[in-house]
Length: 319
Image 1: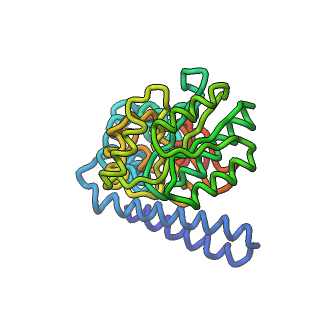
Image 2 (image 1 turned 45 degrees about the vertical axis):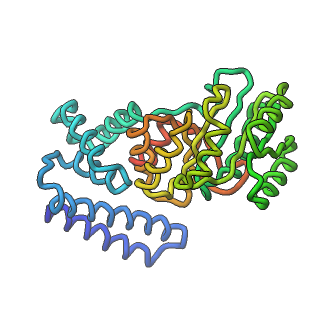
């Protein structure tokens, strides 16, 4: 351990010297490298202090710490590395890249994705976005509409079930005008059914909803009254990657009182810890459909793939 720490300290000192002689773009790259070194130093020290009961080869221990540091719950991280230890030969355990890829493949078997809304079976795709306040549902609705129009050349309509947030309705009205889609504003399930029927010849209908606190029983009842047991709707729970694990769990349990078909994680650009996505996938077994990475419409949305989600946790592309 002392040798590992000393080597990392020497590497950090070397980076500091190099930053004094290069341009800004190189300095930024070296600062990132310095941060990675500090992170590794922290993990090695933590290994000796906090995990004396976990006897792992060096490479597995480093990756165990990386997953924990990235927000993966310790019991899940332990399960993954212990299973990997059983199935990787002694020789291959010495190869860091091999071990990392092995763990990546294990994680890809755990998490589910849906290829956006492409796997929705009916020919007309009706997608309703539900979730708490402030997670970016309205912007996400506009992004999905734009994706369907620009990438798939589909005929798209927007509905909002939100008459209380005037600013949000006006924002959606502005989006609808820019992307040239019709917008209906409804307040109950009768009006929603009428609006859906009026768009019978549209390929995709995206339904935005107002933010709803999972602790407000009245709001939750009203939402369930509109969206519960409506088999033709694909209900998507929108969660922020910046929300702490315990709150995400509570939100999902409360909104899970109505049918949930998939999850969208927003605000990845505002977070540096993505293990909560895996914690959520393991606990609730719901597939992830999209990820959003900023406020720009239509650019900042992407299909959730297993490879991308694992990369967020293990940094495979940066290996």
